[in-house]
Structures are given as C-alpha cells and as structure tokens.
Image 1 (cartoon, rainbow, N blue to C red):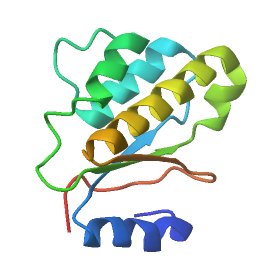
Image 2 (cartoon, rainbow, N blue to C red):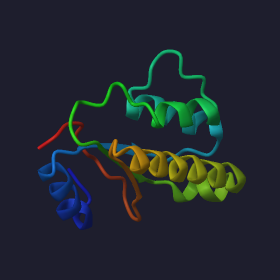
Image 3 (cartoon, rainbow, N blue to C red):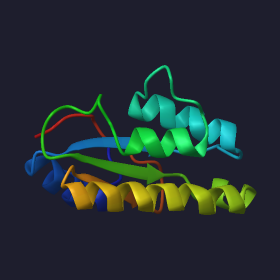
Image 4 (cartoon, one colour):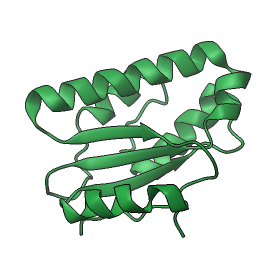
Length: 127
C-alpha cells in the first residue's frame, strides 16, 4: 500500500523505468538505527561500514540496483529522527544531496525525496 499523495509520482517513476525503494525511518532516533534502516532498505553490501562515508560511497555506487535508468529513494518517517538527532539529520541530508548531485553529473539516475505524512511503501523494481 502506498501513501495516496505519492501514487502519481511513484507511477510516473516506474513508468520511466526507475526502480523505487522506500526508506521508512519511523522509530529511528539515532545514527545506528538510521544506518541499519539504510542497509536493509537499499540492500547494501556486507562491507557497508555503517558510517557517513560508507553510506555516501554506497549511494554513489549502487551495484545492487536493477539495471535501468536509475533509482527513486522515498524517505518517510524522518521527522522524529530529525528532531531527536538534528545534527545527524543535517549530515544525512548532505549525504543525500551529494549523492544525487553525483548521480546527475554522471547520468546514473538517483533521486531522493523526503515524504511528509505516513510511511511510504514502494516496491523495488522498474515498471
């Protein structure tokens, strides 16, 4: 089930061949839990070091993303984490922003959106 306001966006992304992945941060209040959620949602490799540099490396080289034009990562439930750990959330946003900029420079297709409201469920895969 998908959060209603995002249905058209997710449908359009899938129609363009993008894979979609949900990163639900509900209940996350610290960096460790944030990194664990990222590792699970993105199916990060075993070498993922659960630190900001490792997350940045993984986001700029997502070998486990199916082939196609790229990935849309939908981050939901992030508000409580942003409130509980504001400095960590600032770093997380910087990592996200840098990864998207890197992908755009190389046309590798990574987009990340922060969803307001309830958790968003997406399915990994293209159209």
